Length: 368
Ligand SMILES: [Zn+2]
Image (cartoon, rainbow, N blue to C red; front, side, top):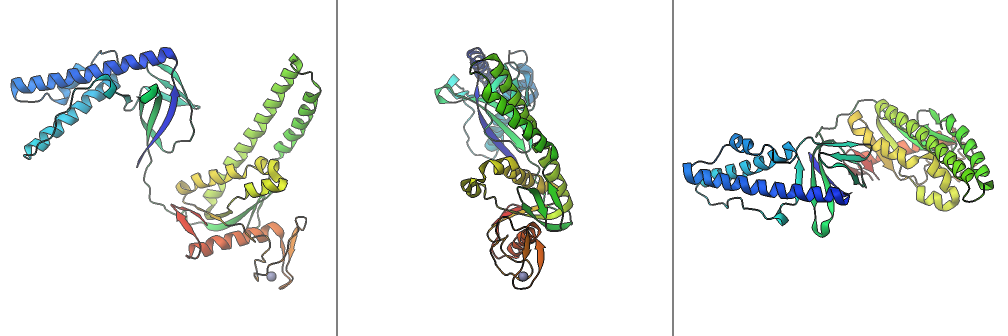
């Protein structure tokens, strides 16, 4: 399955001149090959072969594969005309192009590099690009495209292997995400936030306090700002690393993981904002979703309503103040750790959903 991704690029004025020059070369090459093909046909009654065309595109001042792609495209177009006419039908011959109809420079497999969100293209060098979304699958081709108003775009196609989902055959689990304990699993496992983060956070608070004493515009203030930025980066990296490892482990240990559909918005409104962001729940949910399929795991996002207030044994619903760490059921007298009780309910919602009650399926990942 191929997918295309389009991103705006911002060539410098020099790069833009060069890009336009290459469009001219591409246009001229197209017309030249087309004229040659027609001429050959008129003289010999045969169209040139693809190999013959291939030989004509050398040393034209374009990236070689981009030039070859033009000959390939002409070759294919002519071949198609030939095939259709053989069947007695009429089909238009490829046309000569003017510069407005030669919009793209095409890279069928190489000649470009994409690393750390930076794009390098032969022979234009590094071109500024804004990635507004991430790409899935292996990148196959690139075209640099000029659209009206002189805006340039990079269009990538990626190939995503169409694998049939195959469960890893392992167990099922529900996860309750929290602020104190990062995650509580329905089988009783508790995963705390990484210890380093606490340490860094304390440092961050110290650095920020020092920063507030520094004179505005002073060199010392600038230096302190750098320190604060670096510690922020450290916290982010530590958290990302932790979330990557944890999500990897979970999708490989279970065939079904049930999680709450996040209420970040709602909780932020109640004043939990910063802590929610820090906990990285959204990032974690994303990582789980995109890692699941290839690991043979299904991730289900369930409605979090009443997962805390419900007794996982008898279904009784009672109030659970935030500081109450244990669920004492008033009806059946069961005692369960607050978060474990919630995670069992979260799992139950997912399995009930899968049986057909309230789940809406979206590929292999389900949202309720
Ligand atoms: Zn109960």
